[in-house]
Amino acid sequence: MTCPRFNRAHRPQAGPPTVVDLTSTRSTSAHLSAKPSVQITPAERLRPPPVKDLPRICRKPTITVRPGDLGKIDKLRQDRPYLGPAWRDAYKPMRAHNEAVNGRAKGHRINIADPKKRLAHGRVAQAILLALMVLMINLLTIQDWFSTTGPEPATTATVKDYDGLTPTPADFNGLPPPPG
Image (cartoon, rainbow, N blue to C red; front, side, top):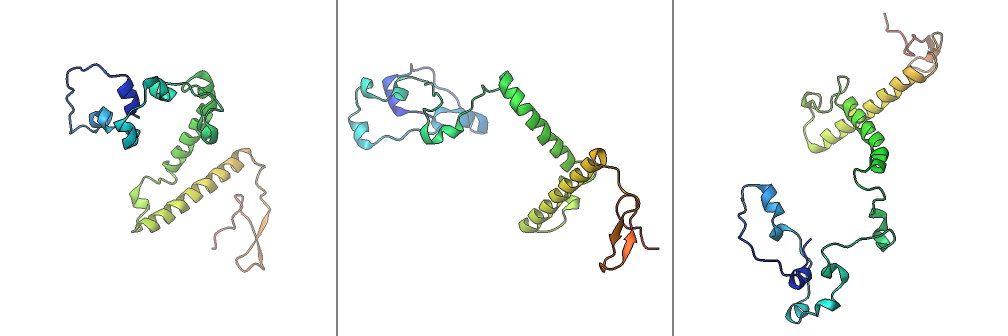
């Protein structure tokens, strides 16, 4: 963010003009004129106040914001220094969990990255199909968790037939045996 008040109070020394490669989005976005600027009123532009009357942010290049200074947007502060040990301890498990879910989503069972598995045309159809794929990933995750940590499956359990009246014996995985 650039501040015209700060630039007026602290004139930068004129150096050689910088050459900007207009084909590179990185160099054009890094140029000072591409950054957002604080807008000041035309009256202030015509009659600028003295430097001592400017707000603190306009007199210093950086300021320190302490917890509680932000008021309504206090929820946006970050209590852990970025990439410090406390930040790593807090965010490393979340990062590992996200990567594990991404690995399951792009794994060999259901690969959401494979366009051959999403042949529906249209944005809405693709979104619904992707939501169903994510639902299946969650169900498979729950099934895998139960198969590794849950109790042993009952081999003599019975499940109701499709008509809801005739019980059929369940297979070892809880599904009825195939007709045959």
